[in-house]
Image (tube, rainbow, N blue to C red):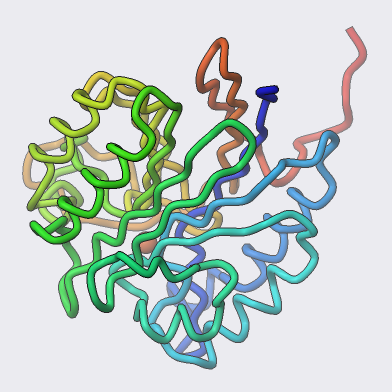
Length: 271
Ligand SMILES: [Fe+2]
């Protein structure tokens, strides 16, 4: 019996234990704790939480300890993929339940598949060590092809850090998924039952189509990247009302994505 699933997506918290972030104007630990409290108070409760990368700023064990503490109030399962600011090995040893090990995944790569309700969830590790852009190499693509083959005709949700398509924010497009995107799109299209691809990295909410499936980029729970589509525009961060993505998946109607503001802007107004 298939059921509707509610999935909260939190992205890019950038927990840092080093120098103050953005000139001390952004407390990323506070931002993550606020987002977690927001999810913990939701009614109905999400069935699971997905973290789409850049859990930390520098990938240190001390930073992952802060992440683990901030996530502690969440009663539902939490799963994560690493981003370019993470160290996948350190992250996995600090958060083993959030990043399960798949025995058949390529060595040292944080890819895994799990099943929740009627949905297969496939985590893809797009990190290129010491680079800000992402890639899916032949070994990961071959692993993904095997996973998709094992759930043929069944609904699948992919999640990964780097978006595989340009958005017009040139400086971010230059560090998106720069290798393996065409092959990934072909795999998604050939499977035919991919319900969505969830990404992070951009620090902005963006909706696209990829391989015939909806692709959603979640905002950061902390700072955002300015929406500047001018050619050659310099990259800059800005503070906006923090929000998370909330996906409602139904086997009949597919993926419906909401944005949920972490803070209310006034009382509820009865209609
Ligand atoms: Fe980020």
